[in-house]
Length: 114
Length: 113
Image (cartoon, rainbow over all chains, first blue to last red):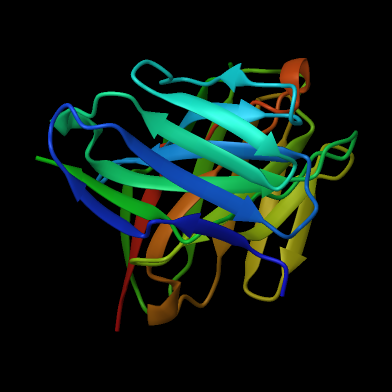
């Protein structure tokens, strides 16, 4: 089945380390998103991308960067991780076009920064 | 971006009762109104959606109603069951930028057996 795959699923790191979370999809979707979820809170948008030449900041982009290496790949980087970036991170994909609709999520990447 | 508010933040009901969750939004040109369900430890998944050319949509025990004048839409779950216990999110899409997909803060629904 076409899906959205995130790696790693769990990661523990130390303050100041560089971390990359990767997302790949086999759905053929043009739009890709990175969200952050904190315990008891909703999904906050970090970055999103229309296609490989397009990157847009979301609500909480400070401290993060992204790279859209191909239509199917969208990675999220923390250049120098800090403890308040401890969270569950979701990648999502969606179709482009007039009838913008459903988002399809990966299983999430749980990041702990000590 | 779109301002999205979701109420209540928590909701507890007895099995068999109905549950209603409301989502208000700011962009009057919004045209797509989905609801996602996130079970504990799982990814969010779409359960029902509606577009602005209809006022209500039903799928078995769940329904979504839309009031474009008041800029809100609601999720209705009837005959609730323990497996309905989850966090529910709305994510209205505003046409000013169809690709800025922002979510409400979520509603934790608990269905007590």
